[in-house]
Length: 357
Image (cartoon, rainbow, N blue to C red; front, side, top):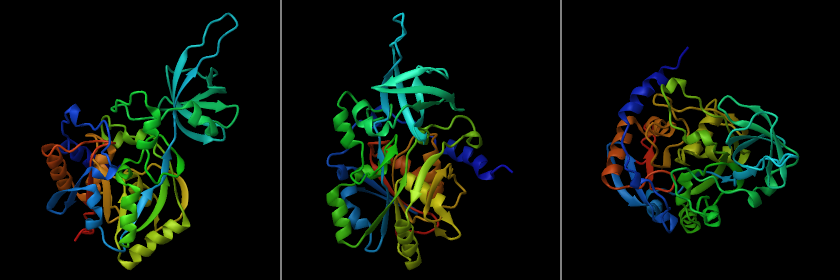
């Protein structure tokens, strides 16, 4: 049976549509990171703050849940092999997506290559062994590529950011300060606002923290084309440790607030939700949270300002309510907030909980 929430989501997405001037797309992050603006959005109310004021907005005993995935240097310029008669040798841009099994990666190639063709990524040979439904290729390598990515790859910045040539700067700036588990091809950007000093202040006032992992895939930010019901969510790998699951379940049992840092953390928590608790474990998730979908675990959500027509805009509407999100985005446009990965942030409350009361 078709999910009625998906059909209702078409109307919601249409009502939440907006036009964003190109100059409002942030090209650089705030310095220091926690100097970014922060819109605090509750039921029927919103205020404008700075991210470094987060200790004024959280309480002792709140539990911050971070996505500790680390962005890998997934963009690699490969070369075609040179044939005995001197042909070949041209370049192919490779956007690695994820390691599907040992030494086999899915990747987007530009220009595309047929099955059976070879590529060289640095000194590492790859063969195209298959083509996936979305046009990605499967590449089989002769050896483990992961230890060599720092040497041969560049960070895969979003196409709307004019990155220039200074990859070393971006390897720091387009990474959360707590990133740990390599595997994402896009940053969990809500976490980019945190500094070590801010984390220390929050810890000092009694805010607890734990981490989960969801490796962000290239499809996360892909705009919805056509009907929401026809949109395919790409699989992303997640894991929740026993320690994290216990901390989250303990906070909920105590009536303390769970604060998700980023939509990827929300998707991880809801993927691990089972039988009234968060279960430890790992796997692939294609969870698609749209208006009408209950969000069970987090009470608050820290998130950036998202693209019109995106799955993430539907997720925040499901979390905070369509009316709150409409008011928040109207205010963001009127008050010159900076949008997307390097832009400003919002603190939202779950419409089921009244989490900031």
